[in-house]
Image 1 (cartoon, each protein chain N blue to C red):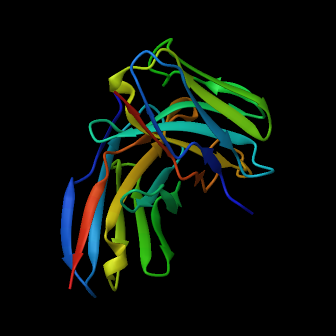
Image 2 (image 1 turned 90 degrees about the horizontal axis):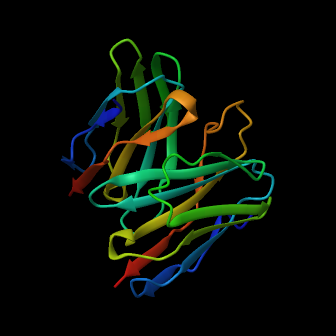
Length: 109
Length: 118
């Protein structure tokens, strides 16, 4: 079957670092995406990994291990505006994009 | 660029009525996607088009749902008849597909249509 797991919610402090994990079991693998979604808004693209390793983009980094079916999103120097839902999504067999339920991140002062 | 445009932004209707959601993708994008998001099921892909042709509609929940893309700048998602369980946020997204695959590296989402079926 197809399954993507990520924690339902996390809390972190402004200025800190937080790591959001995602594990997946899918039929086929063509890449893994992370999206950010603020309440009442549309998802916006954060990162894309298709090869093992770490991709860094400013304060955000994303890591992928295909052999372990595992990814994480790392957010550094947290800001209040980073409070949002973070969605992990895998492009599986046939090009179908499957989303996890999302991790609700709350950043506290 | 105006981004992906969706209309209406909000829709309230009664059970049994026909609902039509509209989407204008970003100009030049070859792929268009329709998603549904609910608290229970999260974000689900319903159907996607490549160059106006439906490629995968396996996510369409049942025959009450249909989608069309008559040209490169317009798509509709229709629900007939609508039911209360169809209440959700419906997103349209588009991507250039320049990386050789359907999803490229970036999907651009529209603002969504919030549908409430009473």
